Image (cartoon, rainbow, N blue to C red):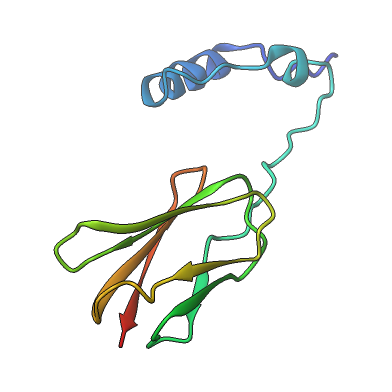
Length: 128
């Protein structure tokens, strides 16, 4: 008896439900519907996280990623009023970037890093 994972009413129903949740997803039958094909869990990615130092700062600030980033990430510094005051892009594999904050007035800012997968992390930065 052949073990084909792409046959049966249960598979049809599961795919139909999945398509309702994500209509852009395409099923790769060539890979997953081979006889005796093993199911594989997607590769886990490290969570996006970073540290800002020195914090408080008076000029140059280092944004240090806890793990090298996957893909490009956008880095935006916002004022308390929600206005973007500094924008940079971190390239794939970056472990840190430098933020030049000397020209900014003293106060509290929010540093937002958005990864390619849409995951966003926000941390507070105080400028003296």
